[in-house]
Image 1 (cartoon, helix red, strand yellow):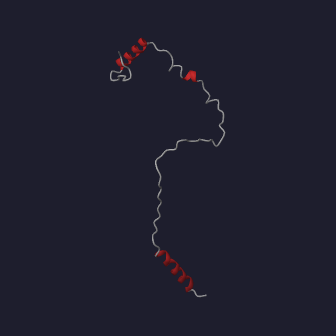
Image 2: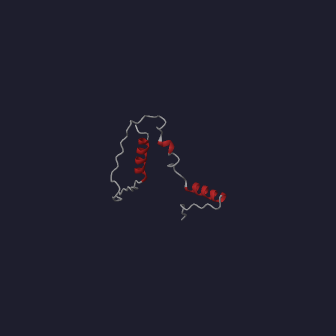
Image 3: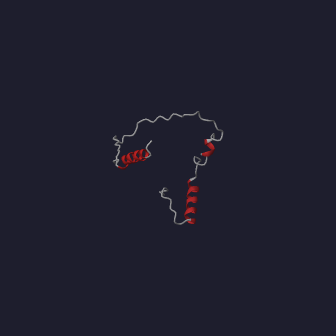
Length: 95
């Protein structure tokens, strides 16, 4: 076997890579911005029951929905505005 044959084959094969042309690939996506009207969410596993997630909504919202005396609320607002003079509540309108 000729010892020059592998060197000659490597030189010929290597020259193909040197003269390869650059190829540019692109993708075009067309569509509109319309949002889906319905979204279906399907769980892939069964939900595990946990006692820590179970809670009483009455205890969490008891302070939110309790009755408030108007004079007591106004006294509390005046006290806060006295202690913090730069805070004015924009949601409270006096008539």
